[in-house]
Image (tube, rainbow over all chains, first blue to last red; front, side, top):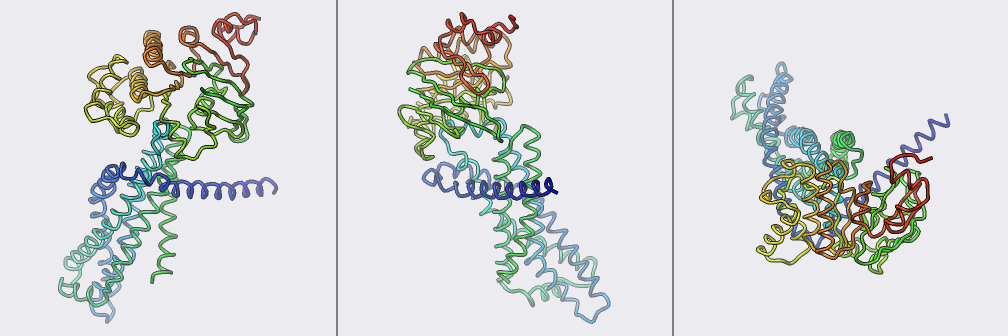
Length: 257
Length: 243
């Protein structure tokens, strides 16, 4: 019993310690604000890594998610008296409000989060971060700031791309497998559409992106113990990013809707 | 001048450094020796603020660096360079850019001057025509030499070496030692080197500090080290138990 209590207490203390270190890391982005201009070029490289190189996977996942939503909505309507154009409304709203930002960011937590944690973690265990510091460069400004800036810009863009391709996938599935033409689908889409729904999805994408990059930078930055440590940091970044996305999803829905 | 005053450092409750004190005068080369895991690299990283002591003071040029703010510490670091055990070159940058990143940040040289400085630094470590290669394209010994080139390119006042010859063959070890001697002579640097290599102690160092159980057990010249009657030190130097 004593051992269990002690382990539990240690875990609680470790959680607080990690939260403190996370806050320290993120707040220290601002300590070298006067040299941010030096790191803008790195931010552009990161925008290419986070944004451009993620487009194929975002397009693929959102397109198929839209198709599945459309088929499942059609299946639900099969024997009901609800008009078929409601499929367009359902697909549009679910994609804009939930599926495009959440599915996209869960996929990107794996792609972007793992990459960031592995890159920074490898730099930590091979003393490259120490080398940056010894050259009097601020490693947080050099490594964390460009990635977070790139995420703030690119995640909303990727969310919009996911919205477009998700709805397109919905139309393709509706036309090809359900007895709904594109005019009916678009009618349904417009009927329930409110501009705020699109903004809400973008805000979610931005928040999830910020969570993924900051958590991944944190996991990589404090990696220790060689290759095994980098592996653990990478796993932790993906798992914690996914948990953060789920929690934020509920919090944002409660606050914004 | 570097002064270490009663520093203590522990990790996860384990005492690594316990009341360490010594002074390093300007222009002197110091070798820090001791068994593996005794805390030599931890001590070295205290000198440029990469590790902050739990207690005690690290004084560089009359400034207590463990009490400085981040930005003021950065100004102290501009006078120091560090050569890491495995080079610590940035994987994503070419050899040229690995040196350029230091010059961009720490100097106000023109592009042509930076180019010339990179070329001179690489030539001084006997490396030519490798500017556009990546660290993954070169050998371990070459990485260490590029690490030295990066360190001297910014013309520091102090240079710290962390086990510069570990894992190298005898010929490359000799080349690195000769290079360190040349760098010391040409730039009149204060050097601190963490090593197990007695050749570095005898050929490069003016002062030797030996650590055991987190404490300094010897602080003197290489001659004094070689003529000591302390059995443990003799065991370390000769590599065999004389009892």
